[in-house]
Image (cartoon, rainbow, N blue to C red; front, side):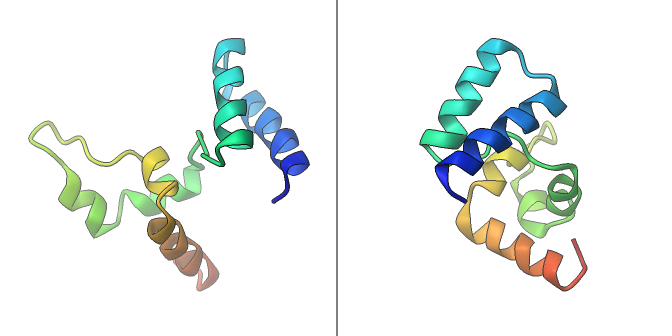
Length: 89
């Protein structure tokens, strides 16, 4: 994805998520300049919450690795894309 696509996409994503102007500015910087995805899709979240790595990360308060962080980890994102390709995500 090139810079122009990222600029266009983050605006669309933030519109769908109802981000404030302050959030949109931060998300723009994260997504366009740092290549960090600040919004996890519902499909990714559903897949991530079923993964052993997420379940093993839960603490005593039942809080684990967030989907936003998980989707920005290369090996987790690659596993998701593989699962999506074979129809299990």
